[in-house]
Length: 167
Image 1 (cartoon, one colour):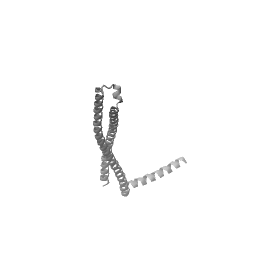
Image 2: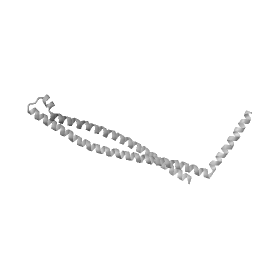
Image 3: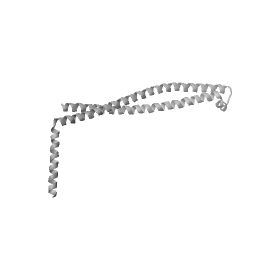
Image 4: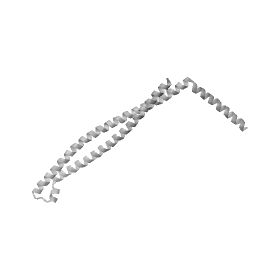
């Protein structure tokens, strides 16, 4: 009984393998297989092109933001220097009037200059941190762009090879 069952399975398997081999020799099946493979490659190429476009746009916007922040940093550095000069000048004026250190620290104009200096300094530090974060993002995007561009070239080569094999 087991021998009969094995012979029956072998016959069925042989039947399907024969049909499968016949399909592999069919020109229409081969052409459809090539078309399917080409369509998958074309879809992947389009997806990578879309991703590249988005990454490039993101990179450009980050670079523009960095440029704007660098301008703001330059302005803040000037404000920082101005507040420092005004505070030092006011401190010297009060000192020349014979005021003590405690009286100088309590002077409203001196306090205003010191507050302006601290505000400009903290804002400047925030802007510099933001610039650093953006530069890190740009570096990461650049690496991803290079990877996608390499993959795109590989896929285009595969598509050309597939098209030449099909002909």
